[in-house]
Image (tube, rainbow, N blue to C red; front, side, top):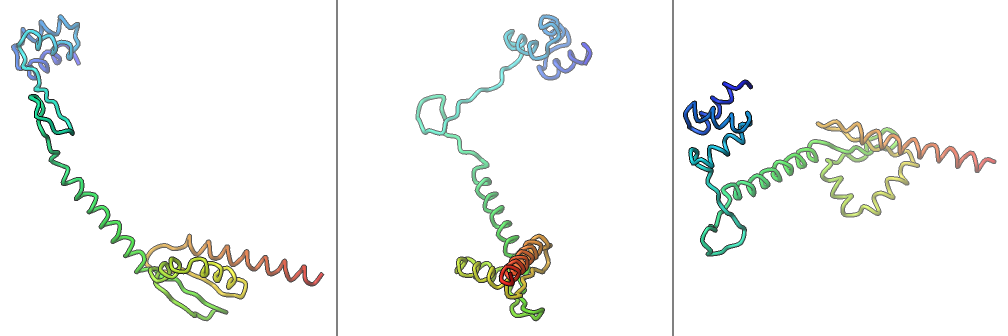
Length: 175
């Protein structure tokens, strides 16, 4: 920024004449902020209003109770965010399913919300049941509106591991 631009900027910001702005800028060695301070000290610029705010109520002069205008909005924003999150979770759990099959024949088809409820209510029993059932050719697949390939990969890996353990057990029992 050249000197003329600085003078113009200072002149418009401080609402002073061209000569006053140029003099203050020369005194401040080209520093706009310092020039603005010089003009304030000379009384040519009105200093910005300063206020004191506190979170504590007091009747002392100079303190005033300030209620944040956006405090209500902040609560509403969090409420809206929580509602949106819950809608996404409900949509996800309602539009996706878990299919349980035995020897390629479908036995159970549950929406994910029902699957989650069953797991929450009896997780210790259900998880043991799932692990044991993998050894007896039961399969678990997830499908639906969302991409559930990650969950299917985990179930496929668990099934492969169960098959390897069965093979190792049968080899060791033959020996």
